[in-house]
Image (cartoon, rainbow, N blue to C red; front, top):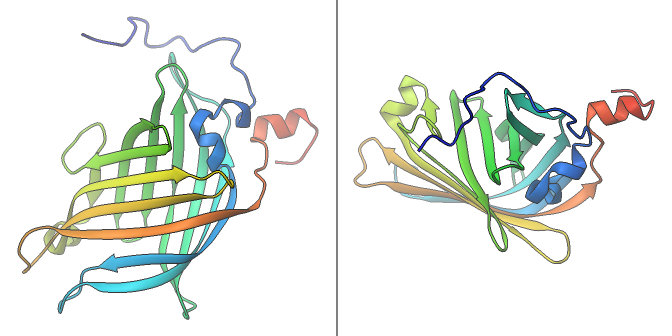
Length: 214
């Protein structure tokens, strides 16, 4: 059964401009976060490598976004990760977290400067959020360069977030890789716990209404 309305053009009226107030489960992610006890398990020629890392994530509310009758509230985010004891960024990621109040749908879009993008979908759980993407899925899928498809093909991605009573949150990220020359799939796992170091800004529309700069 088609869940969508016949009118695909008309946008909703009387949309609340307050991005922070309408983020639903994503509200707890808004702000600037740091984690200093990350652990990355990644594939190498001679076997898995474990690497500790520090991480900073900035998540800022965006103005409400409409696809015709579909309405999203969301966060624009930037992740920067540095291996412990090093200065060079080894993982940089940008994207959006989106929440659809009408359905409870949660989306995470991501792009990394190795030539890879993904759109993962899911929902809130009793303790947090889970989103998933699968290679070849036209709705929640993964797109990679020809080299990554050849050498480190990503078959699936899952991110599970757990919220804690003290306001912090943890994540476990599992990416299943087909590494050329190795049998089976490799479970590339990242995990960390993040603490808020700065409160979120209002979304641009609310800042304008408050007389603040963008």
